[in-house]
Image (tube, rainbow, N blue to C red; front, side, top):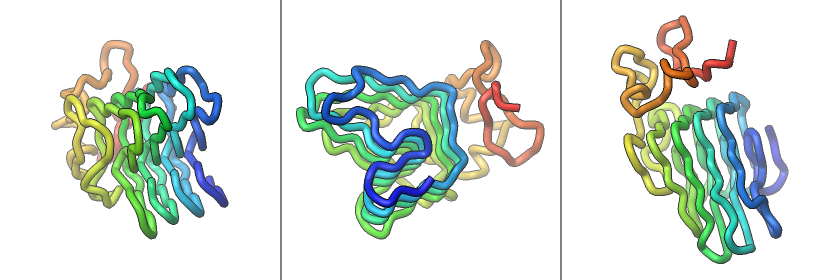
Length: 193
């Protein structure tokens, strides 16, 4: 996915806008394609979550992942979300059980393993991970909750230690997630072949 301006995402470029969606849920979704933006606000799944009006959201991204590289020339680049901005400062977003592994880079500006930057409102990131080795990022914007943390490739690909199940990712009940038969791989969604 390549954009010649702002707001580029592996699934959605912009959520919201001047009028905006009152709510949004992205669930059991993924992107493996590389995402490139020539300016700013670039994310592995969503480029920007934005609103100029009151009482929008909540926005939820859950049980999803991004595996492609993410590049934005002037920053606000994230493995899952590039930027959240809201002129009234009350936009609420939740990320839950998501992960990112692709390199997150920019020539300048802010970048993060899962979230590049939060200008206003809140993003709470719960029980989520990014591969600090492959994303090249040690930190992520947003408010971390639960087990959210940077992990090594070995930690994220080792089924025996299974940091995911320990963080309440569903591999058994529904299940939502599964481990591929091959070794040294990341978990995938159960609906995938």
